[in-house]
Amino acid sequence: MFSRFSATSLAAALLTLGALFTTPAQAQAWPQKTIRIIVPNPAGGSADLMPRLLAEPMSKLLGQPVIIENRVGAAGNIGAEFVYNAEPDGYTLLAAPPPTLTINISLYPKLAYDSTRFMPVSVLSTVSNVLMVHPSLPVNTVEELIAYAKANPDKLTYASQGSGSTAHLTAELFKMRAGVNLTHVPYKGDAPAITDLLAGRVDVMFGNIGATAQHIRSGRLRVLAVTNKAPLAALPGVRAMNDIVPGVVSTTWFGVVAPPKTPLEITQKLSATIAQVLRQPEIIKRLAEFNADAVGNTPDEMAAHMKEDTERWRTVIRAGKLSVD
Image 1 (cartoon, one colour):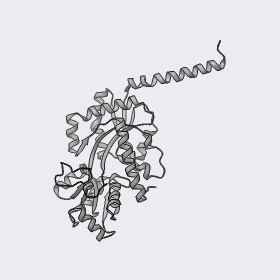
Image 2 (spheres, one colour):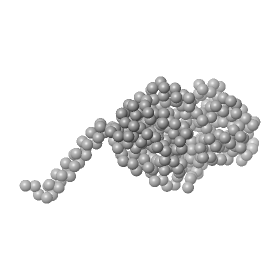
Image 3 (tube, rainbow, N blue to C red):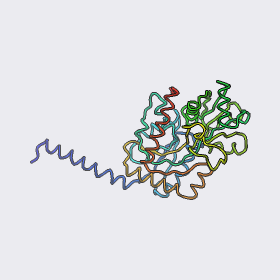
Image 4 (spheres, rainbow, N blue to C red):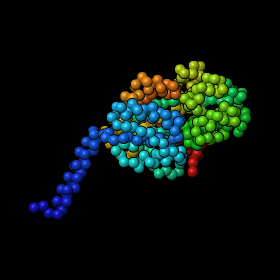
């Protein structure tokens, strides 16, 4: 006959053993209900459109509804916190651009979530950023912009989608590397920032090409450089910033992550599904309309990408002594 101690120990061991075998079984059975993808940005912008583009084809492949839900506020932190505290069962995911995943952790003195603990799924796509100026500014090259900024200290302003956005930090990286001073004018999103740049109320902006291509083509904005590592076929004759001011490399990207402790089997299945969707000709065509390139990498590859991005922007934030309350 077992003693109380031995019976208790056996029960605990059986529970532990059961947990070891239950998790893979649950992952294999996944999904069995609706999957929610939380977007921490407003509806209608690039960060919202990217996951919406994938929702229907993902639903067909997985055999369950995939819905998009916007939970906005606090520079993406509200939506991120919601997913961070969700059950790690693969039914609540986060789709976000860099600020939520790799920037806010260094920019905000205190957050209610740790973005390094999210389980990476896949980078969906990348969109090149471009350096644009209003045509009234008497510069046609990056070199001329740097010379003008040095000759007119504290005169030039630059727009961004908001403090902590990729546009904001790319401009700060440019300032640091080029040795110039530009005054930051933050906006709430792409649309108002671009509107004021078009009107000449601000001088410069590092914006993503997807949101500004029509204005570049029309001549209402003048593009001086792309911030990819190499020139873009979509902008023939436009140089890469890295060839002019070494180290200024920046792309806007959109990725999907899951709550901490989500089983690897689930994130791998999600990643494979997303990659399959991103290989579909119709999806590639739709992404091209936004001047976006499909990625669809593995969880490990996304983890490496996030680590590199986090370290890049942490360096800029510390060097510029940037913070947001």
